[in-house]
View 1 (cartoon, one colour):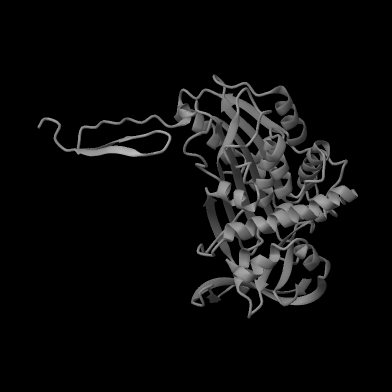
View 2: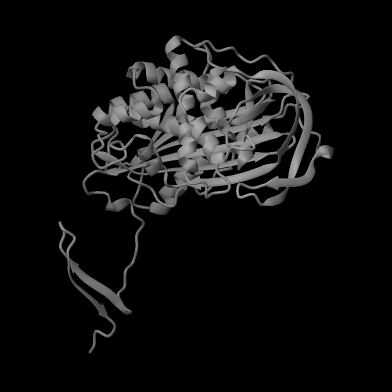
Length: 432
């Protein structure tokens, strides 16, 4: 886990070096050809340089802070050995939802995302520019970004303003589904997730909320020419876990001229992909610093930006492990609430601009996959924001169940508003 803290920080962080107002959108519906990408026979064009306005530069820095705080909050008490999240996928999904919010709900979302001082137009334009720029800056690798909205077509009508904003700025697919066949509806959405991640994210959802917002993200890139790792130099070596115990891991080894930085908290280096528009950063806590202390420091505003600014070129004898992580976090509603979206994630939230109903967030889930080896990296993420009606009317989204009290059962009588239980009992033989 120490090796992969920032594996998908490339999501928000990528915007530092790539943004262009003139780039064209890429059709993410053609994701099925993703696996065909290879750098063996491709010359590496220079990255498409992307100019940033002062406001966009500010938003990019704030986006980095969001990514660091998001990871640090997911990390929590450090009990999980492997964690893999996509701050960008989360930010993009929240960006779609933000256009349906109002009042304190919207203010909180923008505060957490680092966009509190910007207008709707500025924020939406930034997301659109970012999405298009990230896709086009390196044609030697594959990056696909897709957004979708799904809802019960027999119950809801998406408001035209929300639909227009979603399509215009986020290229969002909006689809009404027949919820009368829950299994078929779930299968349809899960197929979209699978198709838009080259088959890496399967069975994303077990059931559907009445209104779903999804972002899918797929990345596949080979290390840049002369930066790949020689398979013959990969060796099984000791790897120290966070608790101090040691295991054997396959460490890839190389000696390369790379960006490097270190301070009292950490040391870092990075290996580029393709035409060097994208890199994977490897970040290690210093010997006397715990992983928890390092992530807390990384969550400080502007700290990561300072680390990058003070990098210098060095010959680095690099050893990093091969690894594969499949990760799913279904507690992200609580994570975002702790990050500052308390109202936005509560029953008091205001999302009046989405459809002909008042919605609240029921759950926020993210499922991710990554594999890193001598050749490069393949990674994917799907973020789901599931919405339900704020006052009743949401039982239809629950999978159909059968309850037969034909064996011993418990019963109780409870007062609705205070929760007071007046009677409880067990029925083991109703014929007595």
